[in-house]
Image (cartoon, rainbow, N blue to C red; front, side, top):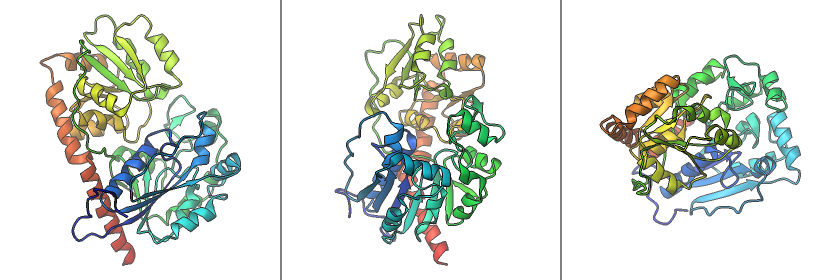
Length: 415
């Protein structure tokens, strides 16, 4: 079925039937992987393709203190299969330990028997583990939104205190207060991974990290994307120049390394958008600094206005990100970024020319002062950032690359 106002598939290309298998899908969702899946599903549907989502609601209900959310409306062409068991804790624990969909396996097999062209796996940690990769006969793609394939904690954050430099998964799991996963000490992933036609990483950095930590299959890079959005109008009430931090208030995001830079000598404010478990500590740190302001959770529309008016986004994450979407959100609004020289940030800044990197407090302060200058590089780099966004990370570019990949894999598989 085609969504109202949908674009027809490009000439010479057939309509695709796409199954998406993922643990989280909005509103049963915590982070960026679920939002990515929703963007992809809607972008495919509006172009005339048929998409069916299989996602695990037990995981969200177990991990969230929120009440059961109301399912969101989906466009025509998108069908959502929400898996739910009578024993959510047992279902999730069995999958987490054994790496197979013991409780929901029959239901997943039933749905995936519906003659799909492609089965696209995303975060499968609690929707079936590696065992779910064996189910179905279509072309199979896996997108790695985190480092779960090589890290039981997903984020290569060793012992809950620093970036991982050497695997010690058993003790690390215990220090994260998680039970070690039995299936990781077996050949299950290697055997199940043979059923996948293409593993995708969102950045070159992530692909290299997977290889470095022993992932046995090659990975192709297919970056993230954002749908079209207009340039916002900056807030007229914001009289002082400001820099922007956006994201969950967690220690691994590194916001605590930025707040000390904004002392009384800094000619700009620091606005912080987001909430999280580390929020109280950050607010205590900012006590007595009137130029540091916490805005709380912001809507996408409010964020676009904040990005548009900022001198730069600051991205100080201490952990190995896979592909930080906040950079694309800033670039789309012609706003450059100042990012830590870690993970995929140098790769994205280098490809776009849309910002600068820092590696310590002195270089961060120097970059902020440079971008704060009215005759500084802010506007020129912002335009470069937007140009790179249009060329590399727009929805049209991403969907063209996606459909071409599926057609390539279908041809190879049939041969």
